[in-house]
Length: 206
Length: 206
DNA sequence: AATTATACCATACAAATGTATGGTATTTTT
DNA sequence: AAAAATACCATACATTTGTATGGTATAATT
Image 1 (cartoon, rainbow over the protein chains, first blue to last red):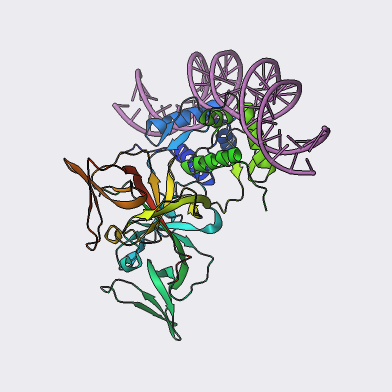
Image 2: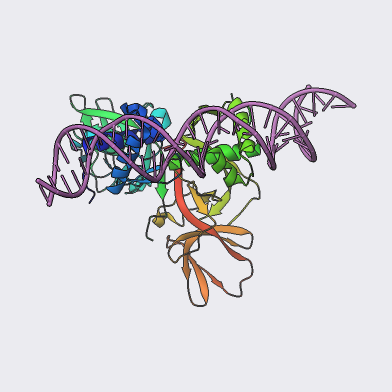
């Protein structure tokens, strides 16, 4: 239960998060410049305050070594999506969209992004709850490929099939019915194609 | 079309990529320490060479500011050392049989290596033929963990169980019998622990 | 009313950092 | 055989970097 940050401290922490996602932690001087301080010791004291409140950890004497605590350990999605359902669609909270934490992974090139899968509807396609899927938004959906789609406020991972009058999103688990999208359907969008799966075994109990 | 890197340069570039994925670019001194150089200028020259070949860009005068160019390196090529059987044992080849573009999120601990799985004996552990497993040779086998072992000239991926008088290697597929290794068994060695799995979906037909 | 936290500034200093320069030895290329 | 690239070492130097210390002013707590 971390203490609350002041406005200034928040702004600095935001800048740190932003910097991390770009791949380069700033020096005190760079932070000072960014916020118009004439002086590094001002930054120094802000960082000490932020550290005291438990948001960061500084590696004394080492330059640019500010660790962001309180961030999700594994690299969850980049922006917007949150979690994506392999089973029933998951709701995405509208106000959560902007406040989802940036990925901790440094700089993800190529516009690809990661999503952690929840649910087991794709287990016959060998994708399981907890797996991280790598999604490329720049590929065209092809019949039979596994895609990420948005339906209204929910996101799903399903196998894609284009029919003459509709698009069908199939689960591979017989317990789940296919989702059929007619042309009239309003809020539907293919987000991208799943190009890879990664699973970390170290954190799995068994 | 970048020029080829030497072994040393490759190792350094890999270290940079790795560092970036951890969030902290190293200083020259840190790189030197990592590779056992007594001297920063050695690193300095390697970096200059790597930069000249177009793999990185350095921000002169700024510490820890090494940009990784060519960063489709979301996927970095890694050698696959052989194939390993989830079902019946397979032979391991001394040289790399293939390379794979491993996503940088698939954090590869030092000294870890890749093996491609053949066979379906671990399908109940969600590992399938064609998957690439990341193997860490520096971890102690723990009961229930999935390990890579060598039996005579063959290698297998199985779930590890230590009993009082033997070691058992279990498949999760009921079609396969567990392998039981008694102490008298000659040519047996645990190669490492499976710490991650990566599967490329683009090459999969369906 | 007194204390503490916040938000800045200035100066000083040791250590870290990147760079420059010059060197040796070995391998690769021409 | 000569030239270039590679892979290291050593020393020197200007900047950068983080820290320490001391200060002022204002807002928030006690």
